[in-house]
Image (cartoon, rainbow, N blue to C red; front, side, top):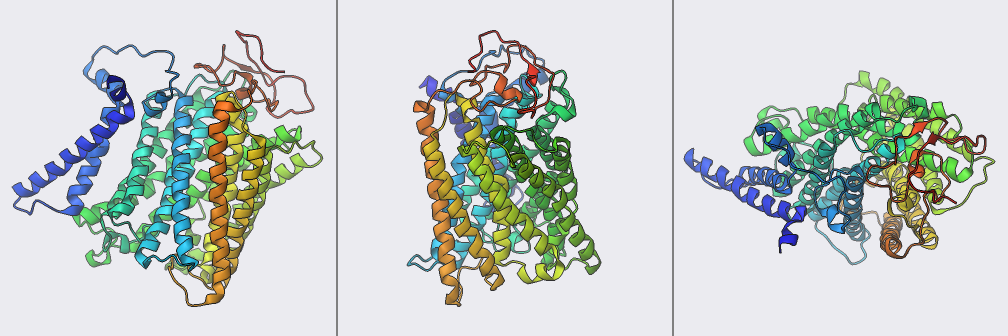
Length: 616
């Protein structure tokens, strides 16, 4: 029993439950003291949930060190080596590798949940004997979108960045290990709130949570989603501070900015976007919650608020957010192609700077989301132009990938297969993005399935397929075992065919006028294409089932992987698999270039080993 309660997550759940009850009871007592009815669902539950999250974090032990420091107490001994038991993933750890796996595992747990919500809605829309009422349909689609973005896409890449950025720059850990732990443990709480929102009545505003619908007419589930999204945003800001500081201050000797791996460049660009823009959407969501619970008139028209103000705040973050979850994926593609082509990355400096260009350009295009919302006509043309121009640095990356692969000795392993699919799908998303930047086209396809198809193209090409490639590429480093190539290829076929069936019919449906977030349609000509999208979604879900089976099987029975199974040059391949606690026996000294495949026998870095090399 003592061992059971030593697990941090168990203590966190108990602390969260106690905090929720305490917070809710305190608000009821305050209301009674003010002469008001004790029960007000919005206020009582909002306070209870916030107090519950605080209790959960305190019970986990996340604030123990800071509390002791604040009161001047003597710091307790913290072991140098983390526990090797699997329960370490259910407790607070300050090791960046453990936290990286915690992030990644959390995202992968919520990924099939988010896909399943979409499958249920697609089955209903296909009219194959499955029926939902319109409110339930919209709630499922809304929750699918917000869970996928806030709890799957961003945390998944946060996990890979947490694990591999310190390794790739030769650091022992993140700059702020305890802050790193806090930023992770906010994510499970946010995910649970967003999923349980369906049991609390859900919300049918769409994942964008537009007022005035979101500030009224919505059940308790809306409050849960707002608090969950706010927590996820806070986590993203903390993580951004940590990664940016780590790259600036802890790079190995000799690693100038143009010797950094491209994945590190994309991590820096991503974290700058998170740090600068996440607070805008967080404040917008907080204002909605305050309006719902305390009647503060920010956006509701009844109280004199401005609904359009929410859209400005939301999209000022949410279009850069597209690059927050896509840029690390583009970095993964840039890492894998040179390794599997055995050629230097074509135009390394241009590819590196294009990440910065995408980040800068992505901040100036948000207005195209509002062409149909009443944005001043004078602003339409500038936003149309900037939206088109942001394709230029993206095109630099695509050109460099093709040039790198051209004439290379391609090894068609699972990581490269997922990368090739990612490039094709991302190109579809990018090209259709340029098309819909044109004002008349945008007004015609606005809020149709064309937009859904475009967004899923970007999401699949920039996030989902690169994530799969990254898992197959780095799994040997994280576990010391290789994943099954046969299962990897089966998953690749399922997900590639599924993506084509899901995305391509949506473009046709959108051009034919099918509106997004509609639970019914009268034109039965739509039905075959709608069924095709449902089949595509089901194939993607089967692909995820194969992935999970492959991970579990390979973790126990996979073929042993030596330190450098792909013969890569970057620093993560110059330590053992899995890496030791301090990552390297000694501080690496960078002496070469990260992508000199086939043109230089000089190693990228000098790493002094305490044990003989396992490479062969």
